[in-house]
Length: 178
Figure 1: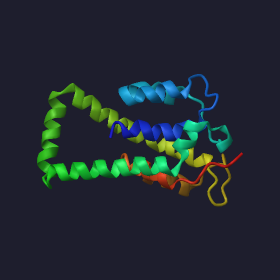
Figure 2: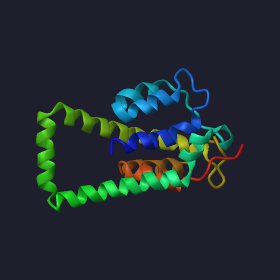
Figure 3: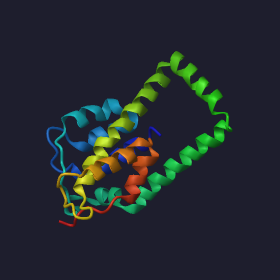
């Protein structure tokens, strides 16, 4: 899951990254694949909010990250990961939860990884809400103020860690052409 969250963030943040000040997007998102929130946190705190963007601003990598193929690949990976976890616990979730808590109490690496996962999952709400604002949906135009329905939908996508944001990448409408 900690490999999928940076891929999701990359697809959510790249459309608004052109001429991003004071920090460029790419080094921080790339670093998050290795360092998680410790790499992307400063970028998320200091970047400019970009509610409007278009397909014309994207390069080849941006067009791939915007594609349904990328959304489908990330979503399939998230579902496969959940399936693997459920199959590996063999129905005994309580025992494995207790084992995880024991490891989290004795291993700083497990503790930090779990906290990193939680923080990155919570921050997905803001990046999904911003990405939704970039895309015309129904009567709402690109960059206009999101409705209560938009914000609720962003919350629902962000509520289910990894799978929810991956589903959003698959379901999101395309950016406007110009």
